Length: 333
Image (cartoon, rainbow, N blue to C red):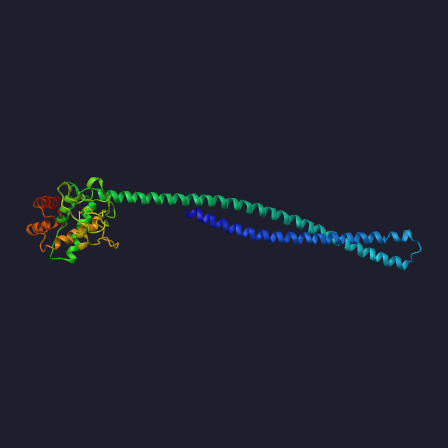
């Protein structure tokens, strides 16, 4: 691409130089043609004078012409012949110069046409290379996207925990260590909830994007009293859960809209606390659990915190089991 750009630049400079030189030659051709026309006019004038005066023939036609008049006419004839000879030479030189300039102009026009053709070919080549580079850039971006998504969905050996989910839980725990160090919640404690609530954002075929968003969004059943579920009246006008009649749990950590609004956190820094984003949801879940701290790195306080998340001992037992499995399987500091 750089070489083609350099070739285009060189051809452009040559075109400018040839165009300037062609303009000068055209001006010279015009002036030479004008000079030749003037000299031809002078020759015609001399010819007319010769025809009218007759010069040397005049004495033969008119014997009464005096010798003094003949001398004057002879001098005039000599001068006229000299002027004619000089004018003829100048006209011949002007004609040859005009021919040479016309040939040079034709050569310059041909060279300029060749340069224009070369520029056209180079421009087409440059456009083709640019299009190829743009296509390669798009393909590279797509490949990077696929690689990033593959990394997010790749699972840790011996577990069902994806690297993307692990990153979200780890970052949430690190953030809470800075903002609430006495809570001491470990990443695997948050992971236990993520596994139980949505299989780390993969419930019912959902997938975790590189930005942490789950797709399609995850929603729990409507809490309208059917199928042994409690009745939970709408609290968000459907803004989070998509239904304006009753509430339902949302996102990979399955928050009710009212609970989410109470403790929602923006972990990604995009200015939006999104329950469908695992990074936001993991930090919010950790923040919610830490309200029952401190010491959530211990089983007793952690159980109490889990029970505040869901008031079911069976739920707590399941989450504790999942959490301790991750602690053993992924020995991170």
